[in-house]
Image 1 (tube, helix red, strand yellow):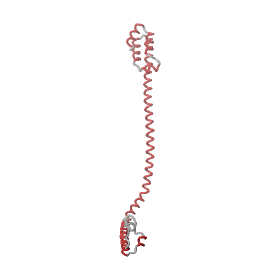
Image 2 (cartoon, one colour):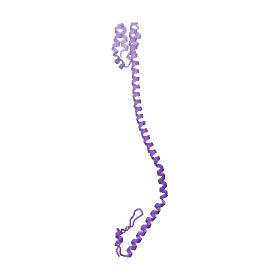
Image 3 (cartoon, rainbow, N blue to C red):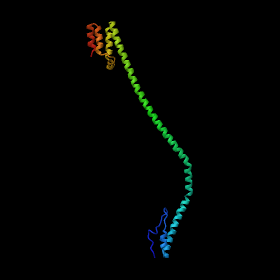
Image 4 (cartoon, rainbow, N blue to C red):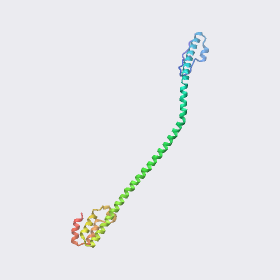
Length: 193
């Protein structure tokens, strides 16, 4: 009696197809060995039939699922197209928001500069008012009014005064050159820090 080697006569599970090779069957000479191989093949056939029945039983369910997937195909394409459009819109909106943000920063900078210019213009007008006031007061010999204008001048921002090319000493010189010496000395002592 020829022994069937485990490699020659493999059992198979339901997920793979296997059987005893034809060479093994041809080499068998004993009836007992042939019956064993036959029984093994019958058992394999039963397993294959059971698997086939199970798969055939799922055919209706699989068919329904396939139909549902086929119906979803155009919808999925539409969703893909919509997602692509949405991505483009988001990208456009993002770049638009960045542009708006840049413009807002530019406007804010322009507003700050404009505010500084207006402030500087107000300071220059104040300076002009002070110098004109001092000159007018000195012409009219109103020394108290001239001293008030000089006091206001001394309280102005130093950068405005430097912008105009005046210095505190130059305005005091204008005052001292036109006023009475003793009145100037009294005012200068009070005004000059």
